[in-house]
Image (cartoon, rainbow over all chains, first blue to last red; front, top):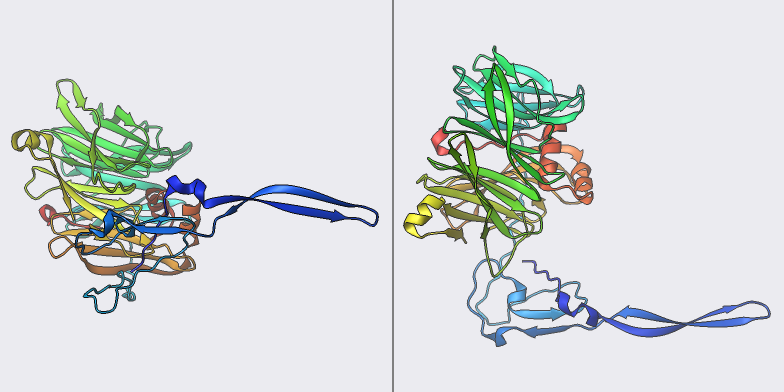
Length: 349
Length: 98
């Protein structure tokens, strides 16, 4: 079991102490002294209990800051159960080796969709291309090469029989950009958007929702999350920007019967944010971002998120990857359910 | 709360009511480029259920480590590898898809 601490930032100044040194330079006929002030790091530190030792029983992960307050330049700390105490420490989990695997003819670097209807991507660095493999009932039905693909997602495209709408961030003559194309199950009919979005993306999600096709694309290098509606106009796939959100680290959508919800996280922030997209006459209504704090007592910085509809289909279940040593899972009822049940957030511990 | 393996991390996660699947890379200095699918059970004590090696390369993981030093996020590392290095996909077929 490993415990680490950063000490108390509020007491940072107390870690230093002032002193003076004398620098002497000598030559055959002269000698000169220079007295200078320097600051040195205090070598001492303090450790004192919090809560006067009135601690509650704890299982699982133990945070040392819950038990003591540390001040000073501490480089390591260990905790040892006293002799005779009924305490057992168990090491953190660690890998115990790997399982050998055998490569098949085609290996995907990304796979999206189900085993019935999905696609796989295989990078070809030697030609700066990506092989796109269409999978139907567990069998690759069609393969073709695309300019280097960084991220992609697909959904059923009902405007053409047995076809899928694929949204991908691909290399273009002017850098990378999000584009769309539709392809039928045989891979024969391909309709490519004549104009791209002009925006690159590291992650893409596309949803078929109440007759509309909504795509999300996050450029992680800028933190800009774009939301588009994709329409089939005059046999062309046209992107229409719905909204853009800045300072986004990662996102993942889920949907109820009446609304599409996007859950995203920000840099240096411990909240998950929820935005509701509701189709209305003539467009899509976008709500303000609602902050959902995961743990008010212990704010975690978050770095990736994945969401899915829960089994009851009345809310989202999300997993959040922290900058620390844990993943956090939570359930969030969709707002229309919250109004009826008064429930909000369940953090799975 | 689910404890991650020390020294392994990645952006890609899948979740349903029963499991969390987390694709992680070896982040240890001097290691090889390796990717694992860590599967956590959500119904039996939030424990790590299974770890599957999906890539065990002889290449060093310098690409990942340098990207972290340059300030890239885990998502950027994922997309960079997806475009240039075949790190093997982890996919997760949710119940309604089966």
